[in-house]
Image (cartoon, rainbow, N blue to C red; front, side, top):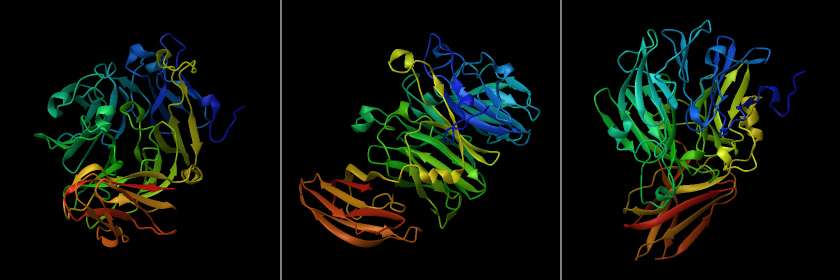
Length: 459
């Protein structure tokens, strides 16, 4: 008899081989496909790091099997993509047809495959496939020919294996966008910037940002937007490309936890449609609802839902439910002395259940010991959906700075001043907003050149 425990069905737990080695089993990707739910797992670092993470298939009666054709194909796989022209699903190193026939692509099986997206020039037959060490391929889903196009370490100036984590790719509006999430103490200290958000127009590569980014998504032509999530030491970041004005705009969001402030601990935040024409975004310990539309070149409908400590490889809608796949317990070759076997669970519920999770709260802001210029506004920072709000300002300059707090309460990019605060050299000044005070976005502007921090705490 099946048991349901608070949205979890224990009989659907994903459990890796006891080993040795015993490293990790995370749920890397979830895909409904012609009546069944595919669950693609991952280990920590390619096949030698742990076995028993093969592809699983869940049927409508919630029975589960290890997909026989993939038995023994163990590795680190987190990609998923539906190729509609051929009605095929690319999942891990596998291509799955509508009748559930599976072909494993030998060139991809040994790699840590993390992203699949549309092809810029051959979208009817080909896709791009990205691996974590920067290998970028094109895959013909009709012949299964797989050809490496780039080593992104060469193209984007990133380091090689064990020093880089490419995370995702996405294609729309004539550009292939990729990201990596390198972040450790040198990034936190401001001594190094090895993360990347970059795009390829079919001819050349362009680095958009050198911060760590984890996910890229959207709804292709519908809505006219591309979303990319990242962070730096100041805050979480949301970069948005709008088709209408052909440019990227940076927004800033709170961090709900510092447990995500490392490249190894952002596996794998996602941006995905879970209700019709509505996106769910998991970013730095917070769930958000996001609308795909941009009006006047500005995004609308970014709202925090709840906070959590989950490490979620993926989530999806299936048979009227929201399904989330976690990375729960990793022995990590003995580095975790209280975890005996690699295993993770699936959670089943409804999207609106997420509002019953942790209350939206967090911290961050546009400036962290940042050089600021007179009259130049900061990035907009999210202000809606939180209760108590406090702003802390610090002046690292030799002269006073007068900081103007501006809000955008319409949400369309027009800001107006609500407070003016003078901060003496070497001093900290705090401002508590009145109960109930809110707006869509807030930003700060200095009256003089200097170095300053501006951090909001939301409770």
